[in-house]
Amino acid sequence: MRLEHQFTVNAPVDVVWQALLDPERVAPCMPGATLTSVDGNTFAGSVKVKLGPISLLYKGKGEFVETGTETRTVRITASGKDARSGTASADVTVTLSEKDGQTTGAVTTDLTITGKPAQFGRGMIAEVGGKLLDTFARNLAEVVAPAAKPDEPAVSEPLRVVPDQQSAEAVDLLEYAGSPVLKRVLPLVVAALVVLFLLSRRRRK
Image (tube, rainbow, N blue to C red):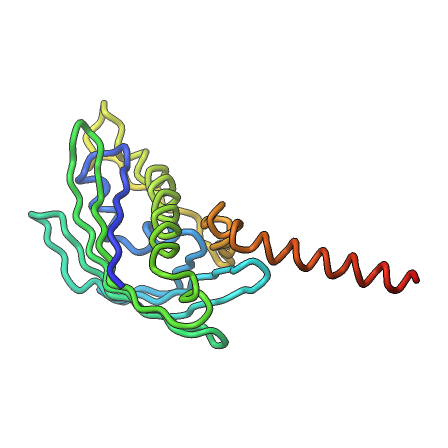
């Protein structure tokens, strides 16, 4: 499936571009992600995901396939596998642009996913993906903040490295999905409570 999103960071495009090309800085900004190794244009890591009570751990690799400095465009391919659930692969293109000191990232993702997360459907995955990118943008803004001070040249300040994440917290997709998923799940919860109530009454009798 093809997904399109946008994110905004309150920093100059050159500063955001430098961070985007550095897996050690940008990977921890994504909820649930942990970077384990970097070798040239390739990197490896894991993403922890929760679907309510169900925990998934995708381990995989990624690669910077294309980097266009003039157009501020980067293309990344990545794939991962959860031992119990299924696989996920993505071809992601990010193009940065700047207006009034703010950087906007246009993200196009060709996503292939199998297993439990695929049950969300395209619309729900797009919504969750957008909210995850919002969180990513907030974290990225904190990373580039020291280098984006308006009274100093951007190149004079090093980008802040996010502390090593050996055990990143899992990202709960149900929390990011919000009310649409709750509306689907709530009738099932109510039905289960009714059944439990009836069973408890029968036991009392």
